[in-house]
Amino acid sequence: MLRPLGVLGPLLPAVGWGAMPLSVPPRPTEVESGALIEAFLDLGLRFVDTADVYCTDDGDLGHNERLIASALREHPRRSEVFVATKGGLRRPGGDWVEAGSPLALRRACEASLRALGVEQLALYQLHAPDPAVPFADSVGELFRLREAGKIARVGLSNVSAVQLAEACALGPVASVQNRLNPLDLSAAEDGVLAACERLGVAFIAYSPVGGREERAEVLANPVLNAIGARLGVGPGTIALSWILTLSSNCFVIPGASRLSTYQASVAAMHLTLSTADVHALDTEFRVFWRQV
Image (tube, rainbow, N blue to C red; front, side):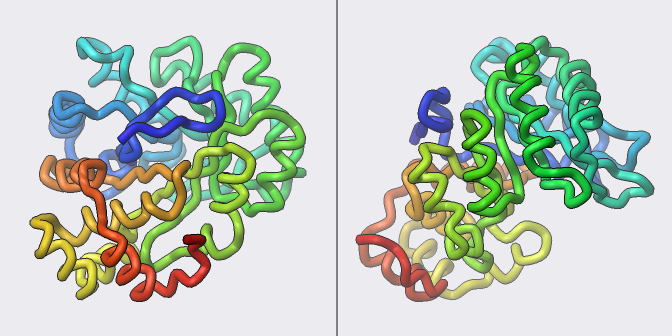
């Protein structure tokens, strides 16, 4: 299942991989991480989402990006892998703090170029709006970086529909990455998902199986489990497949630090839910706004 990343973007697998679990505590060793990434690549991984702040603290910035760069360096399919990264946060003392000034974003972009070992970032996303910086200033810097050739595409993350419209008025936005899963459908309910579809912007769902906060509850859901048992897959695969039905421009980037988890995620691309199954899940998760 391939979908375009925005109006002019490349065709990418609808299921990518969120690499954060390899770099935040508790994390595997770098040797274990490298072997895991190579295994994912051998299974067909072509869409990776990372960030400079997927690390332990400010002294560890770029850890996740360097892991990915190291695994890709000698891989025969390196040129086929689309790597998206982000800037606009810091990790002082392990906290997550906004840093969206133009200067901070420019420095972060240049650091990501070095960490990933590339001359241009395929997709550079503002990790989150900085309340201390005018949103247009942060986004404007991303477009200046694009004009300078440092990034190919501008993306946003953790934004509202109003902020998306403001950004689109400044230049072409390729994607929005917000949280979306069966227990947190706020991105659909607050209009962001619909705005993306209307504007030709790809929507990338992070934590699509619930993330650390809601994963256990999602996987225990009786409707997901009943459908999964009938189709011979796990509840996480059903959850991903259902999320992908919410919009034709939607991608999911579940995290995985085990081969079996990644395989279960990829299976969602090869699964077609029946109309009855989609309706049952819509009812279970109170999706009453779907257009049919």
